[in-house]
Image 1 (cartoon, rainbow, N blue to C red):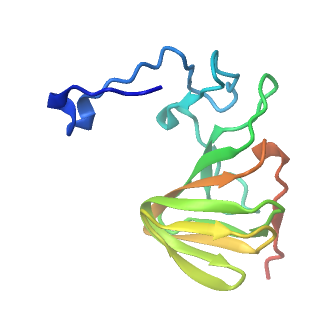
Image 2 (image 1 turned 120 degrees about the vertical axis):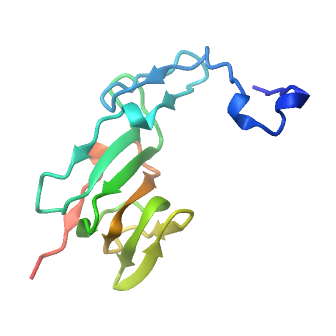
Length: 164
């Protein structure tokens, strides 16, 4: 698809209208069927409910899974948003696939194999496969995008480290 912008809106992206008639708008993580054409998918993160935050075994993190496989359509990646209240945590864990984080709001520390890394808007972090990692949000909380080159979030096994 090629976009053409009138000259008077070339610098004002807020007035740009994109024809989304060949895509499907999705509003729930459990409602991810294939798009009608070209396997396109559009998800409004604000409409996807939060999960998590209720099991002390992994910390206080909550998340929104935006792109994921479902029974109707296999996808080849997982994309979501992790959200932490002030000083919220995701406890030390490992999983087989590599993962990325991309900071959206707030700040915190992501520790990978014992080395702390600052997380804030605009920071990208690569977490190697099977590396132990955890997250500690700062005083204003933290939001970051995360992703895996895997078909389904539900197939990723999180192995939490023993707490002492």
